[in-house]
Amino acid sequence: MRFVVIRFSSLGDIVQTTAFLNVLKGLFPKSSVTYVTKEEFKEILDGQPFVDSVVALRRGQSVFELAKEIERPHCVFDLHVNIRSILLSTILNPVCLKRVRKNTIYRYSLVLKNDALKKLFMRKSVDNIEEQLKLLGGNIDTKDVRPVLYVKNTKKEPKTIGFAVGAKWKTKMWPKEYFRELARMLTKDGYKVWLFGSQDETRIADFVGSGLDGVRSFVGKLTIKGTVEEMSKCIGFVSNDSGLMHVASALDLPLVAIFGPTVKGFGFYPRGRSVVLEKKLSCRPCSLHGTDSCKKGTLECMYSIEPKEVYRALMGLLND
Image 1 (tube, rainbow, N blue to C red):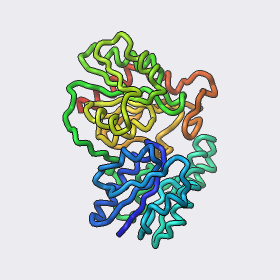
Image 2 (cartoon, one colour):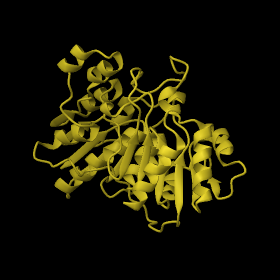
Image 3 (cartoon, rainbow, N blue to C red):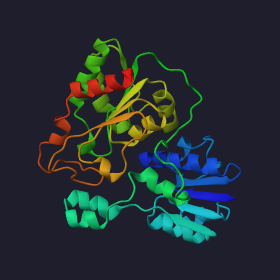
Image 4 (cartoon, rainbow, N blue to C red):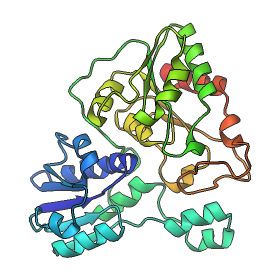
């Protein structure tokens, strides 16, 4: 049996699909699973036991060219459902084609605060992982299934907490002053703090760690695979709603996730040993993916989540 699974982007969405991949490979251990994604995300899946090969869409490459690199599969699972994935899955002409339900109108109804629309298009799954697993049949117990990333290193760095200090959109970023205060509280108690993120988040990391002993920044210094390997050494993690939040969940790290403009109802929240901190405000959610500025100008959803609250949640997870 040859399966093709398609999800081109982005990091967090791809990591979430590892829950589906792990179950798929468990159900069909002798099958061949090919994952199709963008070239920039290929390395995070290379070497994972639930994927036999990864085919990457290169910059400037057409879907028609990409299709020539893939042997005709028995079944395609389209977990992206955009123009590109729909076209590719059609070109591959599989015997079986399944596309995940994205619940887009339901998510928009939450943003618009439209109860009628929400009721009409109410999602029938708790999150995106359950929605994907529905494609494999109705007899799968999805409750304890979570994303998973395997790393060779299993050694933990004692009392080391990881922070993901950035996010793609500014409104999804917990204030850097708060990250710094949390880092101060942790280092005062004898913890080490490791900072993770992209090159664009270097200034934030510099601010968070400036003058604090015990803070080390990996921001902008690692590949995606290198980031996963270093994160796996942490004993706990604090993150905005971002791709690294899902990586932390896939590594089964005790995780405190901070949600501002987005909400758990969108289906992207982390499973596993995690706590989502969010405030019930009339303006939430304000967008599907976050924006570069708060419409009210206050970013109350983030500023109302104070460092001491995150600290308590983290300690609760670590002591559980």
